[in-house]
Image (cartoon, rainbow over all chains, first blue to last red; front, side, top):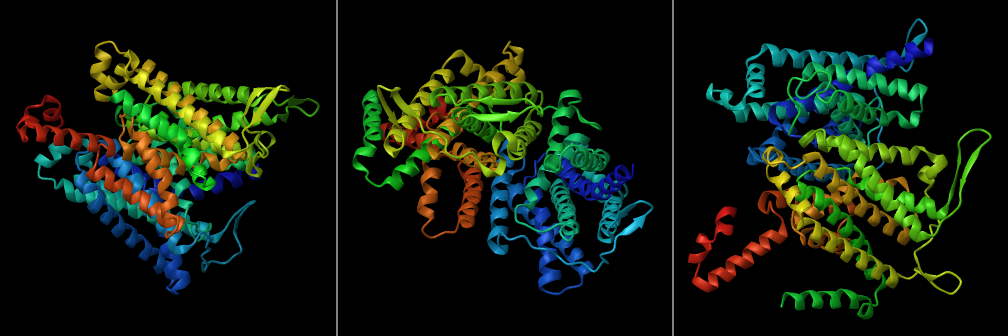
Length: 290
Length: 348
């Protein structure tokens, strides 16, 4: 029972960052109809920026995370402006190919500039874990979880309560009508991509100090984000949030009770199950076709 | 005249080992040939049915693993007391089994994945490849995991104990791969020009319309996947018996990306596209190797993909064909006919 509770706790803590990844991807996916293959690279970009500012340049740890987030937003805006804006209205497969090209280039640029050796980021939290009854969790993970929840709440606020969020929701529902109502579609797209990228970079910035930073860390992150989006359903932010926690739970329980080697396979097994039994996703808003 | 060009090409390809003594170059050509076969099979899905399948490396790897395991033999501890022992079988039989198992997986994944389209289909196919990779990495009892399967026997030719030739050298492997590549090319050509091929192309052009006139969508998509998977499995089998070692890295996503780059750059939906793209991206790394680190090469690949999609969205082969046709038309009637030609007008 203690073991089970420990797994549940780990899953909740990990689920926060997974949800961040998923929300970022589902926003871009839902509003722009772009499968963002660079999502994982934004994730590792965030982690490398924390490494650079905190470990190499000696900036304050918390400040480094904030800087990494901001840089993630900026990089996202740049990618959208340079690669996606000229392809507006292009076939979804075309944008996918461009994003795959960008992903390959970015990942190898990272490998070229930082080397293939895994980097670790030291953090200012005590190494003694926080003990609650029989279960324990390290302080850095508590911090990561709280920060992730804060960011998720911030995204909900942005989307549901601000003018920009209203434009984004309108664009999601019907792009052409939104444009007729005076919504600046290009600005909404850039903002969406920048926001999604920023969320991915913050997930990387938060998890970088927990794990180690490697150039290929983004690959699995991107695939997990895809799994979360499939679980939650197209463009559903609530679905992505819950999907993140479900994936974390499946991984923790799978690693604990089946085999730790198959930990990363859980997400893919979930995708296949969802597609067989509920092809519209758990919280789908739209028919899933094309 | 067309027949003459084909014969010239064949003579050229078959004579390469006679006048090239550089074994390393021959090795590059063999690898290129294997990737050309894989790219041709991917083109069937990507180019003709229009489905961006990003799990293609799974079929390649399954073909490689099955062929390797059956020709080396394996034992599997099913229960504590019972161990299933599989004795090695001849390489050719193992190779065929590899193709069959790969096509069975193609059938299964076709049935599951074609419930969805577009982005979802892409993600399902990626997930499939990743699951297969993780299984090959973790099922150490069967696949040896990261320790890899070693000492895989090469292909042989002849009758055992009478006269037998084992393909240790590069030359016989080159001929074998060339012949299988030609078979695959001819097969794809025949499929594409048949009723099945027309059904596939109609799905690519307009799926709801094709369905409304009675094309059984899933049926043809599954057929395309099975054929593509079988060919990719054959490429995997050729690879494994040539390199003679196979490890889970064979399932890396980067190989799928390589195949996709080959098809897209060469020209998807054309017969020659994957061949041209395969040769360019098979030989390019060797030219770049002199003055660029592997990371830089991959950066160049990524940028090349973006540039091609932006400026040559149909790929190299259609661009060259159009240029050639325009030129000929231009010479004939100084450009006046070009605009009234329906094929060219439709392109515009």
